Amino acid sequence: MEAKTCNESRVVRTMRVFPNDVNDHHTLFGGKLMSDADMLASLSATRHSRKECVTASTDSVDFLSPITPKDSVCFESFVTWTGTSSMEVFVKIIAENMISGERKIAATAFLTFVALDEHGKPTQVPAVIPETEEEKKLFETGKARAERRKEHRVHSKDLASYLTTRKPWE
Image (cartoon, rainbow, N blue to C red; front, side, top):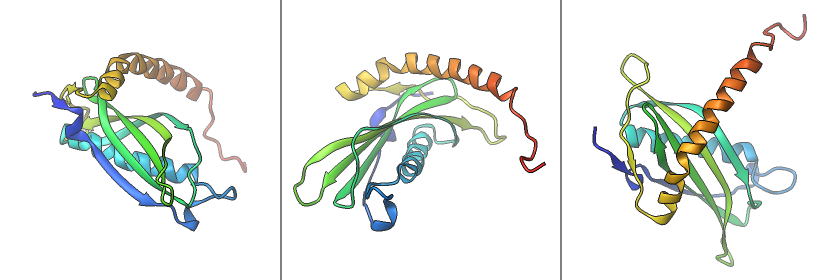
């Protein structure tokens, strides 16, 4: 399986912030941003693997600066690291004030996707080749993030074993 560059999985989408996209603080709803990040990340994962993909985890979403209705929002996603069947996708969210032109990193996110074969089972994905300094840094730190994800998953499964599925009204 031939390795692919980060750029081959890159997806970019810019949108305007409308009044129905904001909360009581007149900033973009965090949930809207998270949903849009997952949507773009899924495109990057599918573009990289050329397989059906599912979100395995949203590893982190860091809100760094508020996004207002005066801003446009640019989402940029690409695969930064791969395991056997999993892919880490980085999403960079840039807010641009449409009047002043000032641009700032408003949020970043890491999501993990798993590629599936025609039977719905995890399947191998190509390795990733970083080219830019940004891509190289994300790639170099990817293995450590993957190890933390594995540890976190073990703890999550352990916690889930203590949770009930009873109906709260019973």
